[in-house]
Amino acid sequence: MYKVNCLNPIAKCGTDLFGDNYTITENTNEADAILVRSAQMHELELSKDTIAVARAGAGVNNIPLDKYASEGVVVFNTPGANANGVKELVIAALIYGSRGIIGGANWCQENKADEAIGKTAEKAKKAFAGSEIKGKKLGVIGLGAIGAQVANAAVGLGMEVYGFDPYVSVDAAWNISRAVKHITNVNDIYTDCDYITIHVPLLDSTKGMVDAEAISKMKKGVIFLNFARDILVDEEAMVKAVAEGHVAKYVTDFANPTVVGKENIIVTPHLGASTAESEDNCAIMAVKQIRDFIENGNVINSVNYPRCDAGLCQYESRVTVCHKNIPNMLTQFTGLFAKLSINVPEMVSKSRGDYAYTIIDIDGKADASMVDEISKIDGVLRVRIVK
Ligand SMILES: NC(=O)c1ccc[n+]([C@@H]2O[C@H](COP(=O)([O-])OP(=O)(O)OC[C@H]3O[C@@H](n4cnc5c(N)ncnc54)[C@H](O)[C@@H]3O)[C@@H](O)[C@H]2O)c1
Image 1: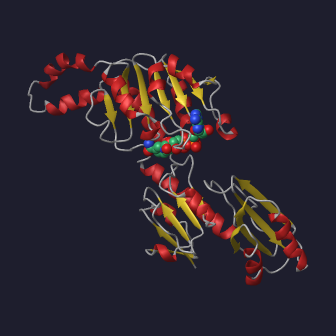
Image 2: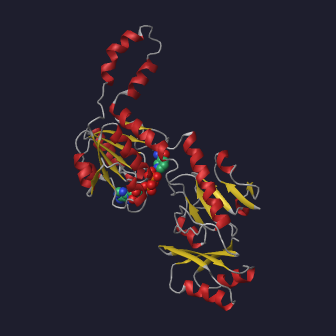
Image 3: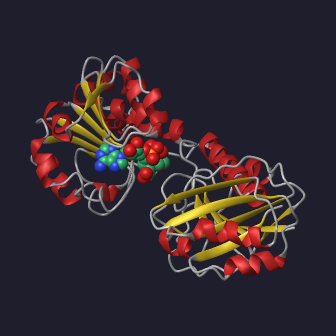
């Protein structure tokens, strides 16, 4: 029986997919796997039993990825599972950033006691007039699961869309409308676009990437949307640019003291993926990935180990190894089975940065002594018999 601990509430449609072989435990220390949404894990020491962490969502800055990788703990996320939810809110933000929808709705609320509100509204409405997005230029920085959907939807709404992503995945690229213009220098987005939306992950390389210099290059009157992470943007500089009228609106999904309560800054409380559908999709994807890892040893959508998929095991046993990405590991694994006269009909090994993961299918019964022998090899972080 495998034990799973949920550090945050996880949608039941997901946890229901753990079959009879799984139980949900309140005790993190006895968990084989952990499901998490936004709970901070940086201070959390995992027990030796924990082999996997799955984040039901995309961002993983609440999880110490490298530390867990060094302990042989595979961390998963659920890329794309909440992309539609975020895309819909970004499209809404393009429109509520351009029209006085929020101010107008607030005005109606504030004037609820006015018996003649119908008439007064006709006079008041000119304060909430806006502009349409059709025909305007939208720059999308980051064309992953969310950015690609935003770009396509904006094309559908008649916008001229420019996309910048030097590392775009083949999968994402296939799904991007041909109407999206490929931009190779982000400065072209800054200088040319009426609207800019950012959809990159928070990494050392992207932190603060929209800095004062980038903002100064933007077209006067630009509307900037941030539904990725607040610290991608130098928000002090952004607030200044909005106050000076260089940026017409900053629309962000991340509330913090720098941005709330400021004129022409529209803040929502991290609502991007706050839909029943997104939460369900993330939970379902996270649970399926954890099960595939526990039961088959496959690593799909990990953020600290390479993708490594050997499908279902067709042989007598399967052993998996988390190890360092250093020379001579595979020869030592196969050498060990050769010494035991056990055939290795299939082996898949992948690396990512400092770490690697190997799935070894064998024509023989895997046992604890093999695990001990492999564990003794320098650079091996965790060994598991999955079949
Ligand atoms: N507001 C919300 O509720 C919410 C919900 C989900 C995700 N997010 C945020 O949105 C981000 C994007 O999510 P996603 O699912 O689209 O991720 P993703 O990994 O599918 O896509 C990110 C894209 O950014 C690109 N990229 C990386 N560095 C870049 C750079 N310097 N310049 C341009 N492109 C770069 C990558 O190549 C990739 O294509 C997440 O990392 C998360 O921070 C927010």
